[in-house]
Length: 78
Image (cartoon, rainbow, N blue to C red; front, side, top):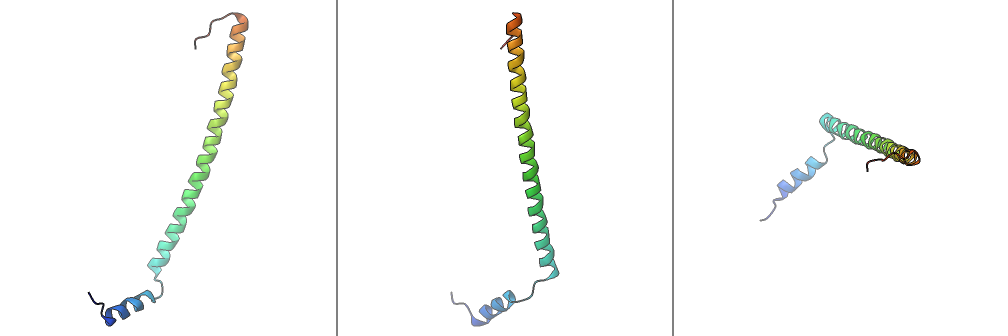
C-alpha cells in the first residue's frame, strides 16, 4: 500500500493547526482530575494513619484490661 503525497501533506498540516477551545477545556479537565486524584490519595493516607493509630490504642487497651483481669483473678475469654 502506497501513501499518496497529498494524504501525507494533509495529515501533516492537520497536526500543525492551533489548539481549539475544546482542546484547552479537555486539558483543564485532565489537570483537575489529576488534582482530585492527588487529594483523594492524601485523604486516604490520612485515614489509614488514623486507623493504624486507633488499632494501636485498642491493642494497648486490651492488654491493660487483660492484665487487670489477671490481677483480679477474673477469667478473660480469648
